[in-house]
Length: 63
Image (cartoon, rainbow, N blue to C red):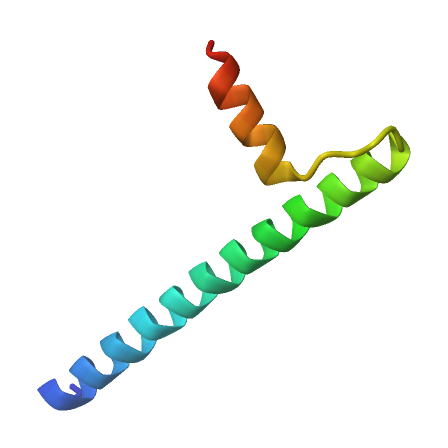
């Protein structure tokens, strides 16, 4: 049987690793979204507006 402090340390390590994996996943999603956007805007090379500008335009035009 491990001591209580060893158990706490192990739990903390697992939590930290989980947070790190989650952060990496978010970074990958963000990078993937940017890659998809640039690929799309290159493909439709008609005065490509930026993603934030497109989002604003969509929001202003309403549902």
